[in-house]
Image (cartoon, rainbow, N blue to C red; front, side, top):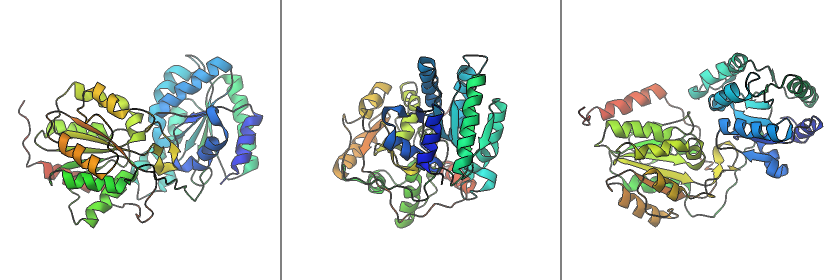
Amino acid sequence: MLDQEKVFAALADNDVTFFTGVPDSYLNGFCNYALAHCGARNVIAANEGNAVGIAAGHYLATRELPLVYMQNSGMGNAINPLASLADRDVYAVPMLLLIGWRGQNGSEPNHPQHKLQGELTPKLLEDLHIPYSVLTDSDEEFRDTVQRAAAYCAETRKPYGLIAPKGVMADPDKANNADNVYPLSREEAIEVILDNMPEDTVYVATTGRATRELFFLREKRNETKARDFLNVGAMGHASSVALGIALSRPKVHVVVLDGDSAAIMHMGAMTMVSKVSVPNLLHVVLNNGAHESVGGQPSAGQLIDFTKVAEACGYRTTGRPAADREELATAVNALRDCGTAGFIDCRIHKGLSSKLPPIIFDHRAAADALTDALQTQPYPIK
């Protein structure tokens, strides 16, 4: 890994001292250094497009070159503001784009959600007419690359990409920032939900640890995985997948096991329950206030009132977060058949379970198994 003190010194030497983005495990060394040393000049954004907008505002206010960090899977969120706001033919806003390169050259065969994105990462920058450099694990080369990139941005008022392969910006020892603010772990919360929902409930688990913990809970409990959808990619879209299932199979209970960072990333999806009837949908945010799967950086999850947001969007709630086993079980039982979409902000403590290995499964077979399991359920007549 690059020496992060030297990384930030090289950036500062080129007047790059404002950072915004979405944390990534391939960038956790960078992200954690920024969190520890940059204070208000490091803004963890809701999503990558949000970060590009924040960076653009910073440049317009100061003429200082900002840096936006992201995993390559978030490039899709950034494309619109890069093309229609920052582009030289629109407002000509320069910025450095630090991008973690998941799936480079098929490097993650057990994670097919990164394969296509890995192939497309350089091509997307090329299509956006954004030049880039692939970083190496050399502090001297990094200093030279940043100097060239900053000079390019100053001369052209265009963005420049810095692509970080595995190991260049990532500490191999991922931090496990455990706390005891709330008694429930994520795994314990999921098990309470499983215990209090009908056996034939469909579960859609969000990107990150929720998918892994649901997967291994099924094995621990000797239960089928056929009614589970593990949304291993597409961060922030688990609730939309669940909404589509709930609309199409209205006699089936559907539970979203969401994360606070994921729910925030595309919070607009929550408004859909005000437009369509999905009384069979229960949306649970497993809220630890952190981007835990990529390094534990803080989110806004425990700073905002998810319950009031959900109520304003049309969900039924119990009026407060659930913070222990009894409160969660009571909320599940109150909302699972309440006549409209239900929502629970389930407060959990931080901390990764070290006993869980990565999940390896056939993604297409899992999707087909879920579809097959739902074929016996009534489909609404148009």
